[in-house]
Image (cartoon, rainbow, N blue to C red; front, side, top):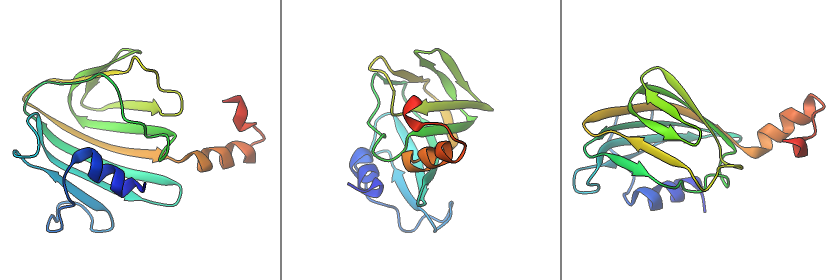
Length: 150
């Protein structure tokens, strides 16, 4: 399944063709009030050969507790988000999710005890980049580090 199809299936909405807030080089998906009880807003992404850049731009209407994460390891290995605006927590390991913070995920080794909480009535704006496994392995090999050691 392509990343585009994964996003469409996960969000359960079609791409917004008329949205001009983010670059047309990528794809924008819109969550509206009728699509979700807990959030509304935009998800934009651009997929390159060895990376995915995305923007989460949501208003969190009701508290969101994510007890597990979807498997992103088919698409990215390491995923890092710069949080522009948010109010929440990530557990195991514990980290507050607030404005001007950085949150990184290793999707190849993410645990089953993943928990993520976003508080209600707040904006969640994050700009992220996910690196595909091939890019990481190529870079490690170029500096003489065996990718198997990670």
